[in-house]
Amino acid sequence: MEKFIVITKQDIQRLGKEMTQFIRLLYELTKIVRENLAKEGKYLDDAMLFELVYNSLPIFAKEFPIEKKARKFLIKI
Image (cartoon, rainbow, N blue to C red; front, side):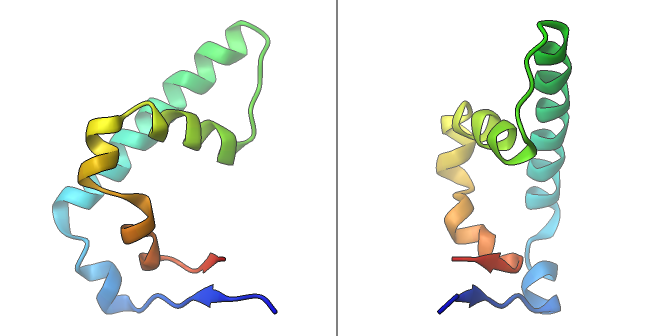
């Protein structure tokens, strides 16, 4: 049986400015990495690309662990 983590509007509102900035940083870095990989003729799907970027940021990963913040979205587990 599939399990899901349910996210409420209040959960998302608690993320605050820091998480928004962190998500924006990940988005921008992911975009840069995608463009650089494309120049080399290499492509990754979005999940693999995000994981690559996220795992490349150990300081941010420690400060904003995805597994703790991920409950802010509907995640299939």
